[in-house]
Length: 303
Image (cartoon, rainbow, N blue to C red; front, side):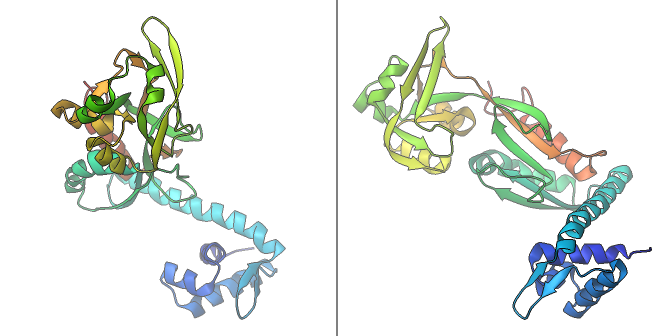
């Protein structure tokens, strides 16, 4: 039996978006063309794929099975196109990038003009947020993450280490005193980053091998490091901060680090992308560019 593969593409989009009109818009087709493609596919397969009412559509039992296969067919076709691009070596198309909010603003944003100038045929779709995205399900080509470990189903290239410090404004420590040991932090006001797994728990170790655990206290919780930094600069509280977000202020003296003899395990900036037999030229170009800008010995916050 010969089956029109275009029908699978159209069916997958209808099932994904839940309607003929939305699928037609996404595919650049007329609604009548989408309807004809679905009817032709159903006739070729000899089964009904969709239950249609005036208000909504739903998958039949057979449609659910075919939808899973159709998604794989479309993914394989997209991968084949990316492979062809990789072989051809042309850096073009749309590159969807995900990165942490504050890192994207302070570090990635300033270097992106150079990247786009290198590849004038490339369109960039940059999405900044601090939640852990699913690259495959959400359609991202590549992601930058600051983490201790990565999803084993993805390929991760290590870039620069990211240390974390206790930092605050000089005015804060003039008013509240400087902690001498981690246990002293229990008496200080913290601005707490809510997207950490344990925002109010901290364990630090010194060179002698001593370890102290402390529960951090504060009246301000926030999910954005830029807002927290602005408040910290005003002396509102202190922060357990990655150096990538505070290194410039530490250099200028606007912020100071305390408990320098006590450390926590560093994190690492990774550039991450899904597994592929061949890496698309546009992804390879971005991976190499991030290594050039943020690789070992090159990241501006290191050293």
